[in-house]
Length: 259
Image (tube, rainbow, N blue to C red; front, side):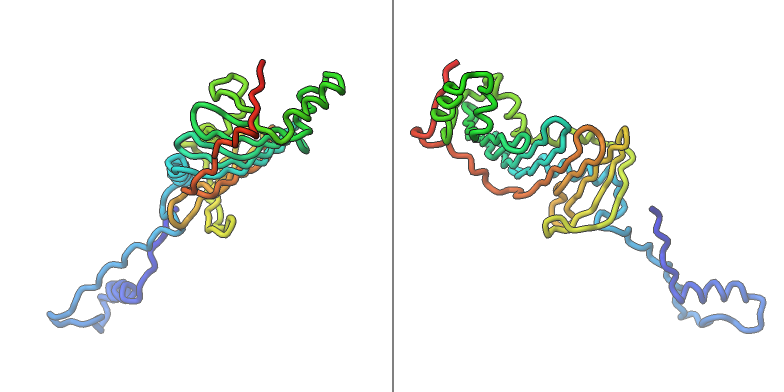
């Protein structure tokens, strides 16, 4: 957007003087000591990011977010089959801890303290879902053995791939490509007590995604809201730079399940 500089009174007087040059009365001082009128300075670009485009601001925000040493993401996806919620803290060293809830219940707790192992703890609803085709005796035995305990599996196990995708910071942010066009600057607002600027990108089929970027300090992404499409929902980002509480559970609370 081009911002026109505000006209100063002295500049107006100079223009009038030129227009009346054929008149009897001279305009302004006529001595050799008269100082020329200084041109007006252009106004500063409006908004917290000056004259950056929406695309440039979003690129700047995602670059800052990807470079953060740690962060917490709160996911709430309204999928048609299974609504999904997750609350995870992750860092650049691969540590990760949090919860994942599928549907109304079926909650899984996750701890990944290093690159070697992942620890998962399932609630009763999730455990019964996994053995729903077994007899009641088998279901009850499974719940009795695993309820409240952590299952230890190698991080390289293919069965761990899907849930560990939640610990992939770059993967979570991969939906926005650098240099995306059509991103529109919105209004300044407040997200969890932090000043933010809304930037919206239209998608296909009526889907839109709005990114809220912090306007003070580091321009981190604070929230992404997607409306329409197959997976509407919200990703909220917080706790930038805070340590991730990913500690290996006590041995007495861990069970290794054999295939």
